[in-house]
Image (cartoon, rainbow, N blue to C red; front, side, top):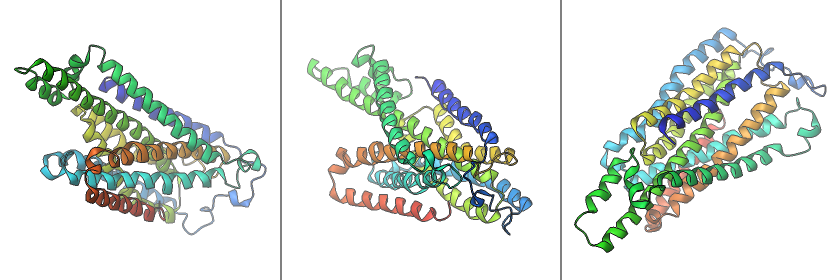
Length: 366
């Protein structure tokens, strides 16, 4: 799959989310809804449309800049010797960022889904009689496993179609790896020539896996970012927006560090890196802008909004849980680098707890 087709897939997914939002305008209040379903900000001192608009206009560039800084830090850090992917410090930073992504799913996205789908504004049947949030999150995690496995199979078949030794050199976006094998492939005996392609092919398989991780992780983050931006953009409560702006800046920065570390390991070309950075950085500001445009018709507590946003959050939570635990943390902690050093394992575990703890504290505001 080429860089342009991967970027097009992300664009299509984003547009699918955008076109689903007009359905929220047709939401009907449930007959069972009580006074709790009335917009609490309308009669509140926090309801101030001009101030809310001013805060949202400040939030768009602020969150955009924070997102760009967060996702680009690992990419620019490649020029720093201590932060090379093969160094211990890189593993510690990646563990911290993985803890951030893990806490995003458990402490931010999943509770929001429970609140949405257990709202008194929804009829008790079926929403109160079945744990839809947990069910959808479980299905999303299994679906992510399926997509992860099938995409890796597709990559391996595509790259391995011309034979192992040819496939090693064929990846045009990782010339240094192909050059590494080529430089060692001459002037050696037949036995050495057989062993080297196997080693290089194993490296290529890991590279393809890293690229699958980036694409699936980006998809889950895009869903979460659009949803939270939409809610902020549609809100007219100054008391809600003001702390949310600061919390979202830190949230996007730390989450971007986790994604940026994965992009670095995927060794994409400049065009694909720019596309991934663009999508991550702009989805939350775009969601805020979309919420501003839909302020008159979008109501957070309407049944359709609660169901659509709740299900999207549940799916995003399941995806983020799988990616953080299986593809990021388990892959690193069970890998040869951390298994060779108990001290590095303990440092990385501490980094995971710090990242997850920091994001858990932010759950108070965002």
